[in-house]
Amino acid sequence: MERVISSLRKIVRDENAVLIDEPMSRHTTFGVGGTADIFISAAVDELKDIISLLIEEKCPYTVVGNGSNLLVSDKGIRGAVICIGKRMSSVEIIEGDSGSIIKAASGAMLPIVAKKACDSGLTGLEFATQIPGTIGGAVYMNAGAFGGDMSDTVQSVTTIDMNGAVKHYKSEEAGFGYRTSIFSKKNEIITEAVLGLLKGDKDRISEKVLSIHEKRAASQPVGKRSAGSTFRKISDGDTPESMTPAWKLIQQAGMKDASVGGARVSEKHSGFVINDGGATAADIYTLINEIIDQVKAKTGVILEPEIKMLGEF
Image (cartoon, rainbow, N blue to C red):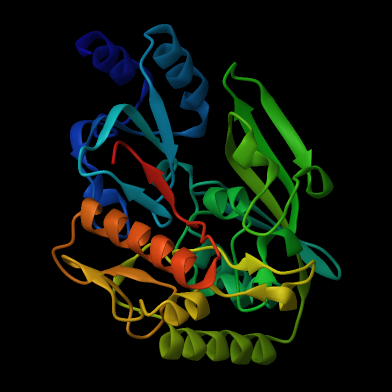
């Protein structure tokens, strides 16, 4: 391990970007999780050498963004965690006659990109102004809210594979679906996305953004530690209107007020499991599974977590 760390510090130019025994609770919106053996904040031109070194040294690694959709075990993560974050966060707006494109590195925060678009009079990302994830994570899972999805705006995606080869995907090649994309099935790291947006009326854009903020504040546990919506909607057909939200099934199963330790179902929105103070990853994990068991027993439906779980539970 010492050899790996020494070699990484020769590759990574920022001396503060390679950390040892780093608590993952600092890097997840749940605020829980044990330590990562090695935590690497990567820049895009370092990725190839980082990955090559880890493969050569047979050091397992995990790629994360800002941790807004993760539950990390209290036991932590063995090997290395490659964080696609602050050192991969550039955003460029290229204006056109009827619209513009935004080139955003995968570590750029989605709300920041969306706000820049809205402030520039571009419409199409209003829904994303309150989604606390990175561009890379949002594309990876086709994040969405309030009637919008990333697939509505993505024109192309750039990745790097495990051999260091750069690949480009057009939107139609990205395999977007409900909270999924082809990238969830590929062993590649998203490095950039190009988004296509139309010019709009700034006042109308501002009104839409304000409306979304008000709806979110009224209906979701803003200010509480969570990983967003905990469970996927249940598909009853081929249209968005035919999907059953998880919160309805959770309430039908009598789990509206359920809790385990410091983890509980949000009083404001039953589809959110929150860290209400002092929760462990085990508390959250146990509550999620109790909800799944009770919903299955009471309704016959098997809920599927929308969040990604890392480490040993």
